[in-house]
Image (cartoon, rainbow, N blue to C red; front, side):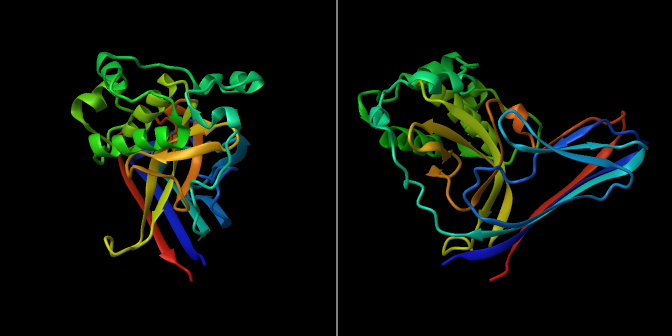
Length: 284
């Protein structure tokens, strides 16, 4: 049994005058390892006179590079996709025997391949203090990561933060509040401090109606993934405290959050207005 849904995502920048746009990069196509079947996908640029090239970055994410030869007063991108939401058991994976319990050490060539995802870039006082409170006795690795993810949900309140960029781990811990990208980056750094390879994920979250939630919804979202030998990348969503499942559609997975931004680029100096929407509807 599955639910087929159509997702529409529109991002529009309107400028107060005609301006030249620098090259833009869009990271808005489902990643190769997306477990939710994508039946169709469309990416449209409604700004006239542009060129579009698809490529893959070093992490195998799909990128769209856009260039604009002439000035424009509007820049609009639209994504349409149809997804089949089959129930996914996020614990349906195998583990290599040596990685069944925490702590473990990545073996051989795998350890070399995971170096970018083990880099620790934040180690402030509050973060070190938080790490010291975690039970680090030998235990099943799934219990270890699930407990940390659930604790993120309990201790870091969610807020919609419209400012660009990511809060530092110290700021998130001090405020005890953060956007999905703030708490996800904190979780990535925590996992790396414990010797677990982790990466930042930007994607769509489709949330179907339930007893607690009367309507279907969708939005851009962020979460983390940790690499477990035998299982591969396992998604952890600190906003909900749950593992990623069929509603999580990854778009870009990177070692650093700046490389996962949905849209990056530059314009001439001007005033601009951003309109943004993500909607979802059931097809069957």
